[in-house]
Image (cartoon, rainbow, N blue to C red; front, side):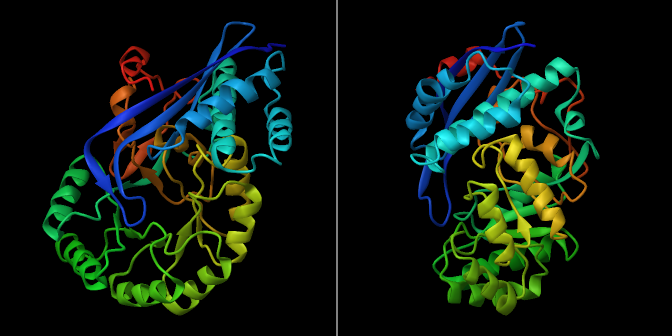
Length: 361
C-alpha cells in the first residue's frame, strides 16, 4: 500500500496572446493555473490542476496547500473515494463551492492520474473505457469578432481538424448575434454542428426571445442563457424557446447537476477542474445517462478527453486550452473532428515546469 508522501502546490498566471471578452466576465488578459503534484511513498507522481479567469487563484492555492494537504498526507493514495468524501464534508460548512471545490478538483485529478500511472493504464481505460476518439468542438471566446473575423477563425479551426464550432452570443443588440450566426451558416452550410454560448447574459424572457431568433439555424444547443441557479427559468427557455440547453460549467456538485437536469438542462456540462474532480465528474455523467441525456464538458480538454472516452453517453468535448497548450509537452491531438485520448499511463498531460516557473504568481 502506497501512501501519500507529499503534495506540491503551485500557482501560475498564463498570459493570453490577446485579451479576450465574453458577455459577462469582462476583459480577460490571462488565466490562473493552480497545480497539484502528489507523490506517494513509492515515488510515483500524479498531477492535477484547476484554473480561473484571472481572479482568486491565490485562495485556491492556499486552501490546497495549507488546508487540504495536511488532511491527506499519510493516507492510502488508492482510496480516492474515501479521500474525496472526507474532504468534501470537512470543508462543507466553510466551502461547498468556490475556491474550496476548485482546490479539491485539482487534488482529486492528481490522485486519479497517480492511480492510472501505477496501474500502467491510460486514465480512460482505468475509468472503464469506451472510445478513445471523442467528438469535439472548437470553443472560441469571440463575442467581439465581426462576422468576417468569426468566419476566418472558423476556417483556421477547420484546418486544425475541427468539424464543430461553438461561438459566443450575448451582444447588446440581438440582431448582431443573429447576423453572425447567419454568416456562419451561409459559409459553412447547414450540416456543420454549431453551438452558441451566452455566458449567463440574459433574463429568462430575453433568452426566450433570443432562442426564437436563433431557431432557424438548427443549433446543437444554447449554452448558459441564464445563471445556473434558476431551474424553472431553464425549463421555460427550453419549452418556449425550442432549443436544447447546455449548462453546468458553473455548478459545483453532483447534487446541483441533479437539480439542473430536473430543471430542463439537456446537455449537462461539468468541468473537471471545478466540479470536484474526476470522482464527481464521472458520477455526473452517469446521472445524465440515467435521464437519457448526453454529457458534454467545459475546459481542461487534455484531461476531460479521458473522462468522455469512458462514457457511452458522451456528446462533444470542448477543445479550448485557454493558453495552457503552450505549456504542455504534447498538446491535444485532434483528427477529423475527434480528440484522441492518449494511450500513455495516466492522463498523459506533462507540463513544462521550467517554462511555467517564469509565470509563477
